Length: 319
Image 1 (cartoon, one colour):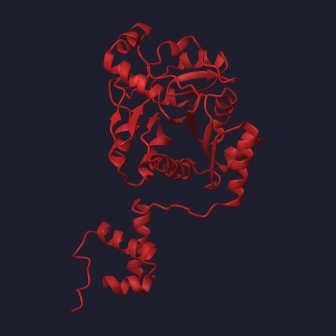
Image 2 (cartoon, rainbow, N blue to C red):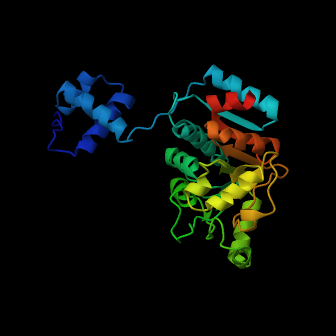
Image 3 (spheres, one colour):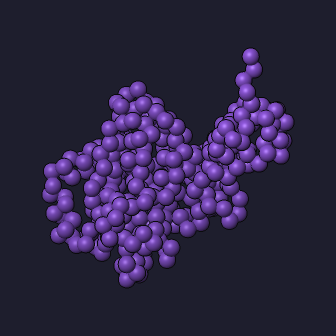
């Protein structure tokens, strides 16, 4: 007996959009076939597939390796001695590259977490890393440990919108160790009080022992994420710019040579300062014109030895 066709009254619009998109992208059916399958018009089928894409129900992954991206990866590795280089295709002029590199970062994280041997993965925070976590597939990684490099508490006491440790733990079902700290403490004395707590010390030790670390990189121009998110005041930012600040990683600010400052807001940075050790991999995830000076400094200063970026940023770095 044939099953009754689904009608508009049998499901919500999003239910139907999801089903239509599944039939189109996974089942390989034409819009005419989808219309017959769902008992709707061809025009309705077309609108449902478009709605699924617009609502973010469909996530695309490009399995084909573009030769131009591969060439840029090889060039980055040669020029900067990177252990890992991943370059995503450009999305077009004026388009935020976050979506492109987030998908590529998700694939790289999944590859790392696929290891049969237990590892410790440390994570920063930020818009791009959060987007990467949202792009990840579900996994069962109970043998690994996930640890945050910095806190997620804003100056007003609220949790940062771009924290990632809880989200990735839900995705991959791994033990996780958050850092219950402000990103930047009100004073050096307050930071030292937090660091004196035994649970904080243990979490920081775990973060420093990480086998693989993924971090965002913040620029230090007038669009600095730390300023936008309220972690730096305008006078703080101006003072750091005057001192030659090039970028920041998990709240720690460094100069054009990739050297961390030992004054200013760094005296109040509460998280773990990212530094490479033997056998460690530290992957920077960033793209866009504003990120180029910060990435150049981080790479030249050996703060990172891995990079996920897009074509335009890779070309700028190489140029």
